[in-house]
Length: 541
Image 1 (tube, rainbow, N blue to C red):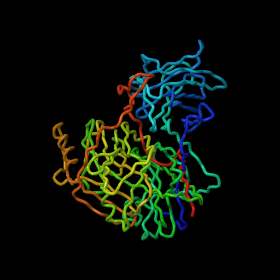
Image 2: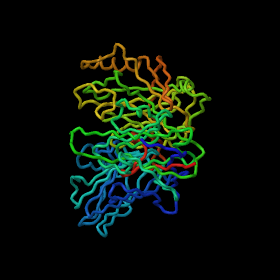
Image 3: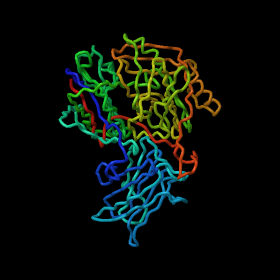
Image 4: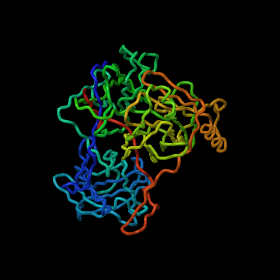
């Protein structure tokens, strides 16, 4: 653990709003691969309803770019082009599986230019932001999983390792920024190295603030009875596939200070199912700090299904769809806070499950009725976990309920899956970023499973009854504060989350239509590493 004395404020700033009316027609740019061989530039015109892309890849073969519901081929909207012996070629396609994408009946993309020079192929094209073509993927103001692939010849065939995925919010793009004059401190397992050394073994990284009574450091396994097991105030995190996330320009995460945390716990979860011996790791987070304090302190609220030993919450095997629920009743906050509880302004969320997760939704309820979503991912992908900007502030008032719903697929499993810490266990969590920060770490629940201990495989009728029993059971709610104190409610009632919002298409003057793939709203995920680097900035007071 790391002792900390001065007061800092942790932040990543975003610009007040990315605009399509920049001087350049294509003001935005991202490298889609770690080696910076694949470059995407884009710009959009909301009044005309179109978006323009330029894709450049270091190859003289075919190139492709697309939008994917989950980061894979199936269900993707793809364009493929190149410059062959007979000249340029370009087609709008869609993928039904891990095979050559099928040419669309309607070619909805317009090729603007396609050239090959100096070992690089550059393809510029335009399309509607929201298309009414059933075979196209609508672009929404959420992070979208972009995919690419390319070949070394113009023979369009299997790409092998020449492919990749990156999650980008095209319409609300927030470029990574570093303030001039900032310094940084590294936190790693051996004295903070800002790289993910072993992406195949590192499952996730968490940096927790510790309560005041933690005054000694230690190094050892997590949750083994050490004093650091009391450190649960999330300060920063990294999850598989995470990119950089930037906080609002008026807010930052406070760290340290006379009346705040002095020690921090760096927790790294590893996944080594093949039990490979002799591997070492120095992964961690890099923390930037500056003396310019922000007006609002940011907090991170952990919600969803409580993870704790001896809680029986089993997900049956060989099931295509099974739903689990966790909840938070914010009225319990006042039991642990001396002052009045303010309205909380949520601005970002990370939705988190493990390998069996397929969909995650977080609903906000007031007076028993759902008033909003705090986030949803209809095509959850464990390998792409990125914190999502909500696009606007969403107010959580005292007494509101937060419900987290997770949908799992266990068709490839033969035994029950437990809720737990292992990669092969499951979780159902939403990490909500908000301000002003209050002294609450977590607010989560688990059903009272007395009499529901299932040990045998279930038929379809029993499965439905079991799933409903978990949801309808009394929900045991637990709220923890920064001093490791807790409040309990044994009679929580689970609310029903409504239908996920969809986006309607519009072609020219045609009336809106919902018969398209826009409803496959893209993913939302977790905090702070881009290409293996944690980019966090701290405000020094």
